[in-house]
Image (tube, rainbow, N blue to C red; front, side):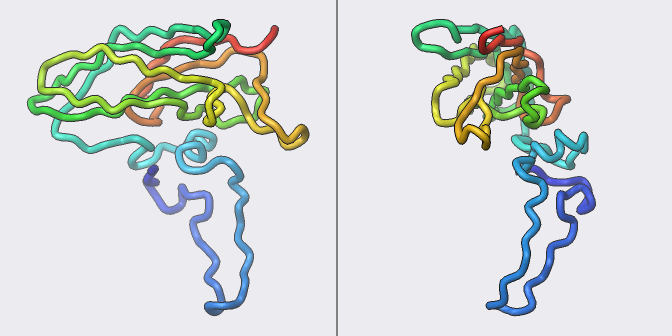
Amino acid sequence: MTFPASVNDLPHPSISTPPDASTPFPVDYSEGFLVGYKWYDAKNITPQFPFGFGLSYTTFSFSNITLVDNLASGNPNFQVTFDLMNTGPVAGAEVAQVYVGFPASTGEPPKRLVGWQKISLQAGPQHRVTVEVDPNDSSHALSWWDVKSNGWLTTPGDYAVYVGNSSSRTSLTLAGTLHAGTP
């Protein structure tokens, strides 16, 4: 969930009140698919607490991040691998999140959550983690819905892949770039 810094940062700072319990009233869905963190990203608004942000008694660091592109294989996927270290004083858990930035020509929001993994670590240890993303599963990690063809499309181009612990640009590190589709 994303928490705004101000009510004025919401897509609809005020919501119409129905006249009574049974009278229909119009609802404005003008933000379209820019729901949650996607709204803040697209509007370049810094929320109070970004999607995925978690308060903790400890801290974590990501290092040695690599992206493995298996899109052309018989089992198309990509993997983001990294070392996660509990750098704080007590045991804790971190939810590593993988986001994909679509080519601008798609009109998609700046990035989309496509994978995650929760890791628990004692204070001090480091753990090698791999998050595998299948672009053909129901999340359609590299596709967007085309209303004209009534189907999912993958636009040829470069897709930036990020890893971090929230949707905030400051918490994400570029893992690499995938090239999808035909040139």
